[in-house]
Length: 65
Image 1 (cartoon, rainbow, N blue to C red):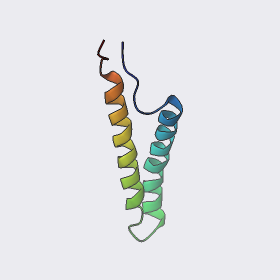
Image 2 (cartoon, helix red, strand yellow; image 1 turned 180 degrees about the vertical axis):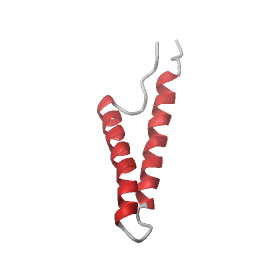
Image 3 (cartoon, rainbow, N blue to C red; image 1 turned 45 degrees about the vertical axis):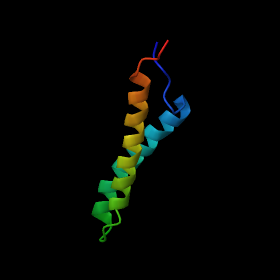
């Protein structure tokens, strides 16, 4: 039996939505804005991706019986 991750299903779904929004917003902002503020969207996308990967790793770990 697999253990549950630290994110609930709703939080996991919202994390994916946030990741996709930040990932698609960064290139659009890079083309529209002259300064490097679009890098913030890249950093946010990477942080959310790290949380999703950590949750996925914990979900795949077998539970101790």
